[in-house]
Image 1 (cartoon, one colour):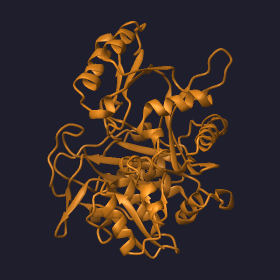
Image 2 (image 1 turned 90 degrees about the horizontal axis):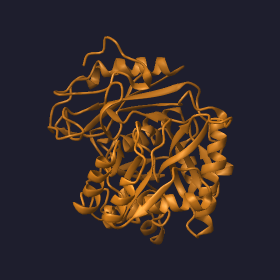
Image 3 (image 1 turned 60 degrees about the vertical axis):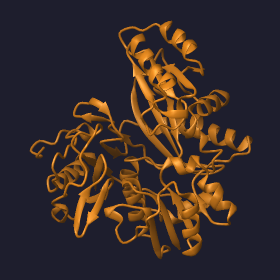
Image 4 (image 1 turned 60 degrees about the horizontal axis):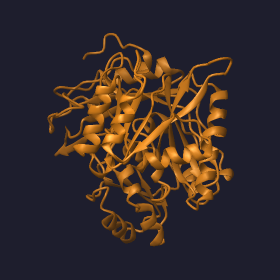
Length: 432
């Protein structure tokens, strides 16, 4: 098989890394890729669908795998399928589960999928009146969300009415997120433990991956602003088999049935951001959906794929063929962890083009996935806010974390920042 991977982050490097292990795969292209995928890179932007299609035709690509959400929302899979080419990911209509929070919340409500209560507004004055009438107390009472894609920045947890008003002004009046803010969702704020649960889907069936957990805030102890993710681990040890069965029965199966019933079967990876709600009034701990993503997560992919034993090419092909029931998706025992090395200043403004040192000194049992890097000659340079994902596996989570942090200690670039408490385990003695 010749494979084209669309995207340039750590997720795409992890996909390429895993697919090189398949005896079915002959050639891998990554568009546009990064320093970690050098030798496979194609200088085509991830959102340039016509150029990607032309490249796939010219190079006899058998399967295209789409990493980021924007090309999925723009209909890249529809375009490839119409041209007779195979592509892994949901069609545009199914990708609305991520591209429109209004669509996602509405289909959850109609299907009985557990999620926070919500209201939808397209007028600022009405939204503000609703927000100011909420019973704000000692805990945040609401979350304000832009309806459309906002690069992960259109969600605001509000402690009081003034914060809700500020969020509404940014989204609806200042149009900070463009047309993504034409509608807003104001929803109940849930409290509990978050978990990322991804599933391979073939339109009718969902096969769950190990539950993962990422760390969103920039600083140790979950302090500072949110980021795209500063690290992750899998499996999350506090997610019981019972909760996984509940998620399969109450979340994935109803959503797949609802999508199929409306003529938009869901094929690809479906990512459910779940809140684990505490036991209450005799009711066992239960799940509620915070959001859906229509793709592999980042950095969750970097800790899930190292645990996959089955040939990834076989799984993706089975999804496209509607034949997941014919593939046994197996996972290795143990755990995986990744630590994100970020540029100084991230998630705010940061300097680019800084040399990265020490990659050749990383221990052999550690894998470094590149997220935001370029090359100049033989030198790797920083390009993005999240630069590297230092990843390791182990018999258990502490062992995986210890190995990952040993890899971190070998790497340096000016301003490098990272969290030393991924997985809830501190890493004493690791240089900061």
